[in-house]
Image (cartoon, rainbow, N blue to C red; front, side, top):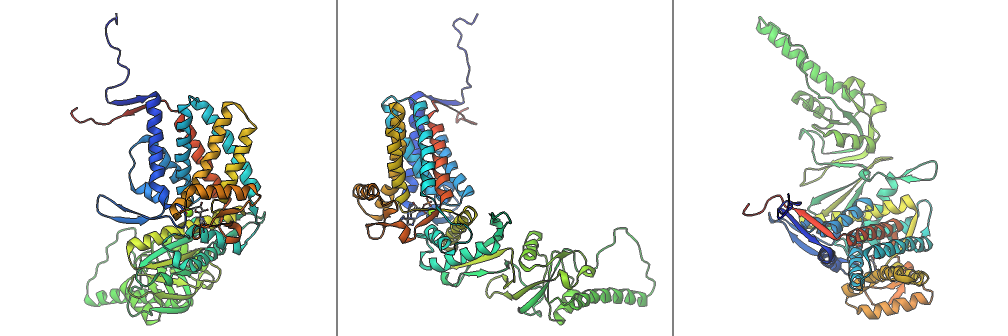
Length: 528
Ligand code: ADP
Ligand code: MG
């Protein structure tokens, strides 16, 4: 019955490409993404200026940010962007590295596909190569249990090298390490847990980058309710209130009949008295600062100010909880619940000049801390924030795991040689795929050399020779072009960053090369 009739399986708004065409298209896309971010790799990598349709400018060196800002269309390219995003979420650094690795894996795959090596053979070789890579990394891992401040500092320094914060990197790295160590929770079983949200990064425009500071406490973008209150409060005793300091309306509606002006006056007087009483009760507990989640009535403000008490109203709930964690205060619901033991302490509460910010600092044993970054423009402080964020994440990774590796192309060269040796022991077509996986690690020294203005081939040859001679930490000094010991140079990274980059790159590449059919459904086609 169907003779001569076309059978329609796909709707006509589906774009389809298959076989070689689909594979090539994904390879091209992955290579393009890697190509877009590779010039930012390493201390001498350059930055990108990205402009949104609305004219917003972002200048950044951060792989994940670049890919986030340019909205990528191609589905294969989107997978690579996802690798970068996962990298950023899971470990906080190594995004450019991950993209470069996927690009290189796809490039190697292209070469093998040309030689008619089947995608499943390639994917299998990549899987074996990745397992070997993990083994080699474990062998190269430097273990340090507990807080090794020196190593942590080096990790932070490596993460911010080459970013806009370079000029003050020692200071900032020190602050980041101090911040992470302050909020780290050392469990009884020897493990360390750190909540990322316990370290705030706050930015303000004004002053100089050198004025960045670590605040052992909290910074809130609010100021005191009444100008008559002190601007600065030393040795503050802090009360946190979740309830309004106002006369609240009763739940049941009641009418009060007032028949004379005396009654009216008495009524108002009573209200005034109870508001004054609120302020007096607070003062009686010994509190010198009140942070209220809701409003504070004018009369209460007046009396608080008279007692020399600092107060902020409409304090956001979430922030109030952080202040509690920083100062050791307990949030209470009623003024009556305030007592000496629910008050928190801070060495200083201070309003900052020219900006709407109040600093609560010098807390005894804070569970949350803030890093305040300053700079001349929004574009600049945004990039500072990203660099400090990277540093914070890598220090957290390192402290939690206690495992470190040496960077600066040294680990990559070890991987390159180690995986190649392993491939030789496998044989067959799989050997070619594992070798290809090994080759991919050349892309890191190559890119570092290129970005620093050295001949990549020369540098790779020198690196390989050094490693073959047993110098397992030999890497590229990007400022002099010499091959040096990267451990001595202090180029240290958390193991987790490298592992994650290799694993997710290998997984994404293996997935992409097995695709031989792409069906893209369009929501709308012009003319339809
Ligand atoms: P990513 O987004 O991958 O973290 P980066 O631009 O931060 O990209 O560059 C990281 C690379 O730069 C790593 O391979 C790291 O080992 C290398 N690197 C960092 N600092 C140095 C240094 N001082 N000398 C040589 N290489 C370095
Ligand atoms: Mg980095």
